Length: 468
Image (cartoon, rainbow, N blue to C red):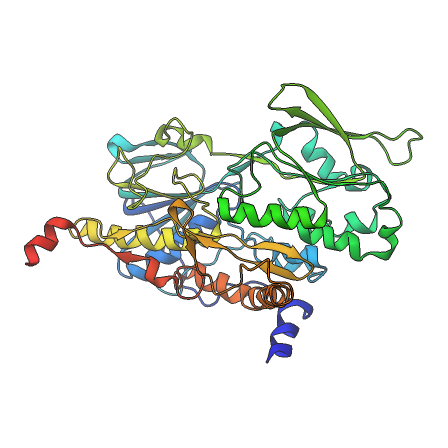
């Protein structure tokens, strides 16, 4: 059975992601009023697709409209990280503009840019039309802020001269494994952006380190070089007990961590230049001074920003102000928000969004019946962390950093057993990842196995008294 899982998860060629059987969207015609509206925002619009599946699963007969940007198709990030493990060589398998509709439901799909919102009058303005709604769901992700670091986008595209790579996009993620093959001395720098950022919590520090130590050709080039991790924050992971595990693993491998370092510029020249320049320019946030780190290869990730169109719903933190449990907007009671744009104290990655979408879909059903919101979100989410070559841990947690089981290992200390469990966790994660993504977009799951108990209704106090 283990060989069967292994052969299907890592080494077999991938099947193009399809999302399963789905119903087609209805024709809107001249209709301008829609009861429920889902507005997909951000970099990949994957959150909006997930919210659509959860809503149609819980409200089969309720019509809903999905608004997505005309210039940016709905995309998914299925198996993007597998490029780094030399597993998937077929770019057609992932990163394409694919919309996956729910298997059942009644919905409209509108590909148009939202110009502005008028929540006081329940209106959405497009370029050539105005729609009204009863309830609205802002399903948003961060957008990459490429201008925050000078020359970042340019250097990632010009990999063969800059030796800079990233997992921010599929066409750049597949070049990460080249950083070890082309390494010819100097420091390897892994640069984190300032928290919060897109896909926060998922990192490949130790996988890259193992890749360097395993490569015989690189071993001779590693003399006098350092593996340096930089971050503008005082931590590698927002959750304290997960952060301790990462620091412990870094110390055991001799990885140098530099805190309070904000990347400002990337300087490089052509590989053929006699006096080649390859420097990362940092600002020391403690002293305010500029620091220069020379690199041989580097891994960077862009900072993130909330889409400008939702600024009127945001609070002083720059995120949409919602109640942490019901996910209802604090000012507009008929507006919900999920995903990275929501101001909730947790990591809203693709795993946490499953539970958030279920909560909003359930609460909307109660509101339409004139009842109180019963479903509550307790911040449950998880972050996959690659701890080595084909090794993975997946710590789960909720508000306050309380640990939650994900059925995959989080052990990093037991000498032999932890290594075996991490390898098994990686195998199982990749074996069922495609199936998990399909069910996520269909609204059938709430996260890892057993997480249904974390997404449950909470009876209102007044209704509880009325029962007795």
